[in-house]
Amino acid sequence: MSGIGDDANPCSRTAPCKTFAGAISKTAAGGEISVLDPGGFGAVTITKSISITNDGAGEAGILASGTNGVIVNAGANDLVSLRGLVIDGAGTGLNGIRFLAGVGLNVQNCVIKNFSGAGNGIQFTPSGTSRLSVSDTVISGNGIGSTGGGVFVGAQNAGANVIRASLNRVQLQTNGFGIKVEGGGGTGAVYMTVRDTMVSASSGNGLWATAPQGASISRIMVDRTSFVNNAGTGILSDGVPSAVLVNNSVVTGNATGISFVNGGSLSSYKTNAILFNIGSDGVPSGTLSPQ
Image (cartoon, rainbow, N blue to C red; front, top):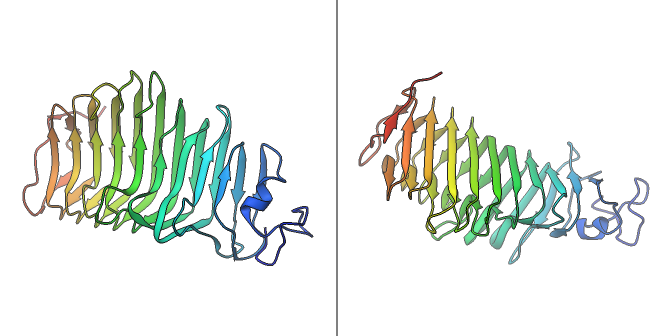
């Protein structure tokens, strides 16, 4: 990929393409699209196993005004990896990354920002069993003032499918919600780990685990993570199948620190600093001893 490339080219190193959409049709399944120099490479829909990689070539941008930045609608065994991209919704974009199908999505060292009030930085709602891994990434300014937010993991179509998600060293700043995990009506489950992450200045909740359809299990492990200055609840467990476990984490400056409602549970390993929240710090539903 090159900012001065041409999609009529064969997308080789000496004759690069100009857009991700132009390059993906010329890249074999399991292949890699590499960025050679800075540029704006456009929104893209991915339907096969592929990697899009920028390792220090300068900004590899996707401007997604009024649309989705990256859509993944791949095969059941297809793995997609994105590294080193800047995905910008310019205030009107729908979602930074919208994942519909595939065995998994890896997001590393990316910036995802400025998606609209109902949009998300990452919307991960697979139709089957799948996994999500996000690391070393900044997700900011998404879903402000509406129903969207930073990372949304939804199991509405879960059936008996299992979603496994991990966030590691992620900065979630000034989003609508920071992280939302929503169980669905099937018998599947969502298992998430959030580690070494900062969730700050959300206009809603920092972490929100909910099960409005009352069947799918949500299990979220939070470790060494900070929930700071969110306008809603720092950590909210909402609904009977939702269980959040918190270890070595800081919850401060939120409207409410921690809360569990509608049968949800929120357990503490007694290693957390939950203090100086504006309304109430809250108390866990139970405590656990480190093993």
